[in-house]
Image (cartoon, rainbow, N blue to C red; front, side, top):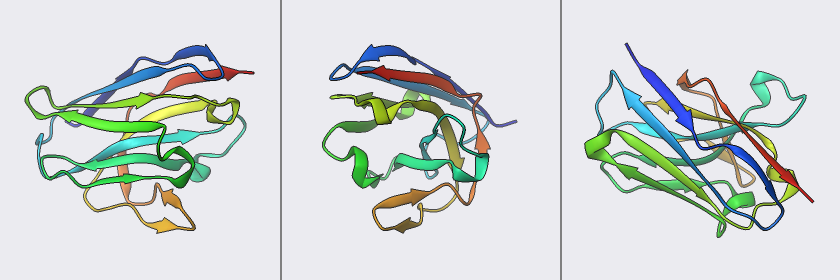
Length: 131
């Protein structure tokens, strides 16, 4: 059974940093697309958007334009864990962050990454950035 467990959320002031972790089980640590998605306060589930995705074991990484240069996704294949280091956080980064698993690269339109095709999700972790 696929399981994704997020940790590391919290509250920070603008300009601060946080690191999220996603521990996976029930699937291979290589050859999948695992990443971070976020859902803004009040947004519907189908408005969930991709933040950063990695092709595990392959090195391909995908970032939404809004986080490029500030967020870094990384992986520990031995632990089947994917991380998201978030720097220079802004109030607009406030959201529930979900770890998601899919079997294909994310669709990108206008610098945004779609969550379509990602069928497995963690429970989410809250990130709140105050100004």
